[in-house]
Every structure is written in C-alpha cells, then in structure tokens.
Image (cartoon, rainbow, N blue to C red; front, side, top):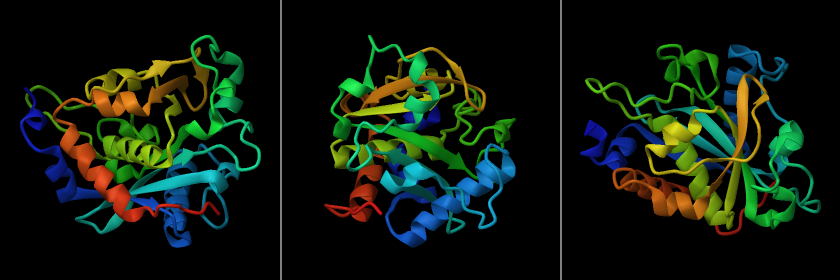
Length: 251
C-alpha cells in the first residue's frame, strides 16, 4: 500500500496548497498570466502576447480556478470550466470545434444533452517549476507524467489532482452533470487509480500531441472516489464553497 493510502490527503493538501475560484478581475488576471507563461512562453503553443496574458473567446463564459502554493504564497496552476454560451447555448465548446467530426455520437452526443448541464475542462496549466520532473516540462499540465512515484518512493500528484477535483467541485456547485475533456490518452489510467471513470467518446486527434475526447460524470466521480481520496475532495469542496458566491456573475 502506497504511503498516501495510509495518510490523510486532505491534511497533506492543506499543508502545501489551496484552490480558489478566480471570480475577480484580479484573480482572472493571475489565470491569464499563468496561461501565457506556460502556453506561450514555455511551450510555444500560442503566440506571445504584448500584455503577457493568454485569453480567448471562451473565457467570457468560463469559471476559472487557481491553485496556490502555501509555502511560496503564489499561484502555480490554473484550469477553467467552459460553460454553455449565454444566449447561444449550442455554440460549440472548444472540443466540439477541435474534434467534432471524430466524436462517436452513439456514445455521447453533446448537442443532444441539456447544455446547461454540460461543460468542458480546459486550459489546465501548471508552471514549469512544479511540473518539470523527469521530462514533465513538455506538456502544460504533465498529465502524461502524473505518476504516483515508484513502489520504493511513492508520491501524490497534488496539483494535477487538486485542479481536476476543484473543477469537479465547481461543476457540482453549478449543477453541471457531465464534463468533457480533450486529453492525453493516459488520463483514464491515472484517474482510474483514484476511482474516477474517464470514458473516451471519439477517436484520437492531433492537438498539441495526441489527444482523445472523453467525458466524466460528476455523480460517478463523487460516488466512485477511492477512500483515500475522499478527505482531499472534502477539503477542496470546502475551499470552493468558501470562495464561491451563490449566484456568481460571468463577465
């Protein structure tokens, strides 16, 4: 049994990190700055911007999330939950544009789902100092290397898991039932260790490397989490609730 299965991951997380919804303009600016640093400056996925802020059209109808290093008192990662576009709910989500032709609509057809109940996990980024371990510096979030260490030296990927569970907590608070993600093929294997089911919904596409469209059920995630992950999710739920008003305004 790995060490993290015998300790309280919630207490461990609180010792090193905290998550917070980025609802204010100031916190959103932190998000855009991290994204520019990772996507534009470090990886070259997007062009460098004069204001050093990476934004796109989906940010106006997204809820953003930040993760802060307690020791350094600074933000080290971010993610966003892209919601249906107000006034035009069937406007394509990012993954629908990137791989719409490759989706297996017999498995899942997002155009036939209640659009207020679906969202996409997008723009997950972690600064290089926190992802550059054993080759992790070549992807924005290092999901491919989101390993749990070795038998002799286990470790828990707090940042990646914390961001994803933070997005799940945001989705729950917003009444979102289904999460879509365009991700690296190994995500299902990594998250399977936590009790999270990730279902492919289409063929792989080339998008900053090989990516697979997939979906996750918020209910299934919450009910399926393994016992050692539940204290961590409980802490994250509390942090999201503390930083999130009952009726936020997107702007």
